Length: 222
Image 1: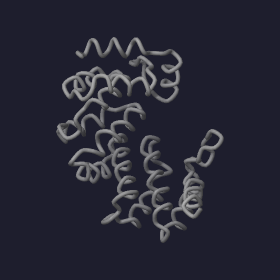
Image 2: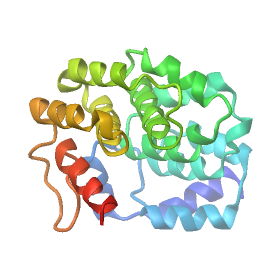
Image 3: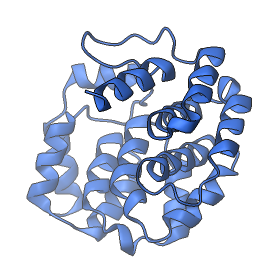
Image 4: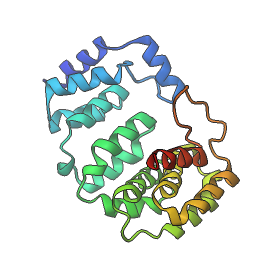
């Protein structure tokens, strides 16, 4: 499949309701409004195609970039290219997929994590905290948990929304996975109050760190 065929396929799947939902979540006008499930199905039909993925990403169309993420070969992307991609991202859904399907599979992700954790660019910092959450969850060896809590306590309430979201994941992850730091994580969450009033659907866990921590710990103890 070439770039024109891929774009026409995406356009045919577009829906005004999805476009409106995306706009409310921060997406721009350069989008077709394709449901995520339909993008996944299209990616399965096309299969891995790094050249096509590169062309799709360069369109800056939201749906094309989401499709591109599923077609890339993560290990083929140069570190500098990935860094540039992260910085160019403006929509959280694209940032989330880029993190889940590309960054977390990249061989230089730890180097990038350390660089991004010290970066002032909001999308770079967002990616850095996302990778740190993965470390907290899966490979905490070598992490300075106390230093992370100090940063969160000092910075999270004033952080830009994009950064605040993944920083909050790290706070909750520490509280869930490190009993020795749980009380402090809970206290930081209570004191900062970030996402305390965040609306959630019935049956869903609140992103407010103390509620999230307590819910997950309760499940672990059942």
